[in-house]
Image (cartoon, rainbow, N blue to C red; front, side):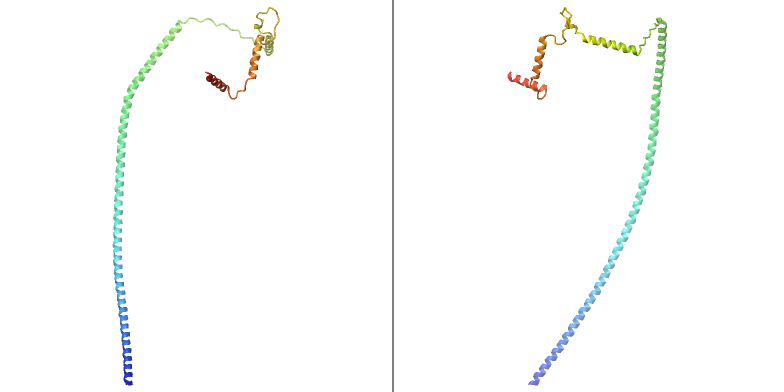
Length: 248
């Protein structure tokens, strides 16, 4: 019985070991397969990447060639348009020059015709004016000759004696005499004071009468005692006018 049990255990262990070995082998195979698959996948990815890069490069090359061709055609078109524009400008300039020359010639011809037409009547008018001036001069000369012949002879001129020259001493003596006469006249009483008086008494110069003197003093006193004017005369007049209006 013990031997059977030991044999069974040994068989179980052996089977387990073999199973483990088989499992290990199977796992190793699986990992190998997985690694192979990965390698294959990587190779395929590399191939696809190469193909994609080739396609992209072809597309880029095509686009670059197309762009270069488009640029060449654009340059050619620009050159053609530039040459056409230059030719058109030259043609327009030539045409403008020709037209300007023709217009200038026509204007010169018209101006010459107008000046010729104007000169002829102007010359005639100038000749008429010259003739009239000559005729008027002739008439004037005839009138002057007639006047000269009809004038009466003038009387002989009488020589006017020149005034005698005065020396500075004589002039000074004359001025002094005049000043003395003036002072004497100022000292005398005015002529109106002698009216109604028979004697030679000369009153003091001053007022005409005592009443006039008193009246002047009254006016003077009134001006002195008058209230001060705060402002101007026009302001006082306005105040008085306001008082009068209030009364009325």
